[in-house]
Length: 492
Image 1 (cartoon, helix red, strand yellow):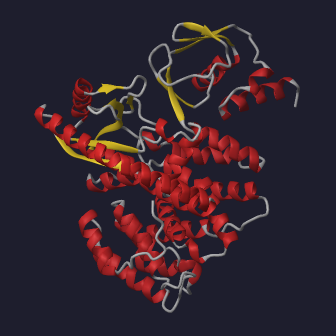
Image 2 (tube, one colour):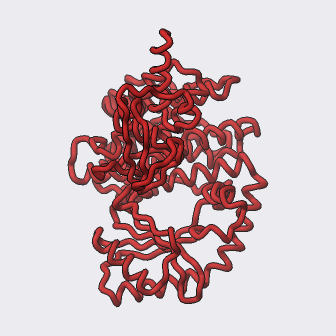
Image 3 (cartoon, rainbow, N blue to C red):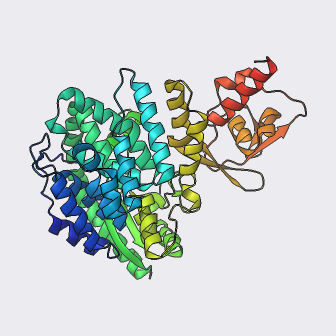
């Protein structure tokens, strides 16, 4: 990803044209009023980068327009800094643009008021706590904040080095995980790459150089594979919408290289082919045809349609040997799955607007947003370090799906054990856990589970939990229940 110091200027004309193309339901008359209000409010103001201040709300609104968001969100983006940097008040915004817009602007403004402390953990914990409350009240507060953060990172070159480091670190530790959990893959990747560039400039440049060289060697092979794939699907009457290649984000590649001892040859998804089809049946049909002609690598077929990721991501992934013996990853998904993979909760907002649903967050897959707000209320008095550790485990780490003997899927963080599984199913099942079976075989209670495992717990009445379990359990739920049991036993 190339870091641009000189960003293209966003004009109202450019913004309105993008809105007409992406979000035809947006009321341009009200957007124009918000633009003129923001223009007047920020008149004469400059950013540290030297550009007119108005460029910041315009860039923020433009990003949200790319996400197909609604009228109120785009207006709030244009007005999001008026409470902090101008003489206008919340009453003014409510008077001219309504209560909902005013509440979004107020929420974004409150998130910007968190003061930096010497204790970084305490600062991050407070930042996250405020975000959870804002997310539960109106998810659009976070969407505006993510777009705002993306543009702030794009102009970070104008700030002193200490501020660059603080903002970049906060972006990696707070904003990127939230974007990922909201399923917003594109904005998450942009935030991570920009933050990586400022935190580790030498590593970033070195990796960019390696990647360019790698792409050059892969380009011809990718073009040939893409042409062949198009021909295969056309001849097999698979109704596909598009086939395109996508490159892995730089920071994501950096993380993966750390897991593979810096061996770039072991990473097969640096460049992947993405097949967009019309419906779910076509996803599986396309996968079958691909495997008829190209041999798949063992263990590299993943069905995220039947078993979506915790953030709602759905797709079929396979890695195959092409005709020339070269290896390539192929991802297959429907148009709706693709929109949701790129834009996450924002895509759900778009579909809800289009289909005239009243509450776009009234969706099972985003119920965790409300769970998160409840969780933070329960844990608000915790030590900041412990709060952050439990938070990452509970909501932001990668998850696996395992199954009960009845076939019910259970979501757990990577590294979870049968004890974590037992407590997730029922507290008493956890306390009375005696023996665990995974895929029909008895295993140790500290065994790490894997996606697809069938887990069965055998209990013993009046069995007590062991303090040793605290050494290996992964989930906050299991840890807190075990600790509570021992506190009660010891009369504390």
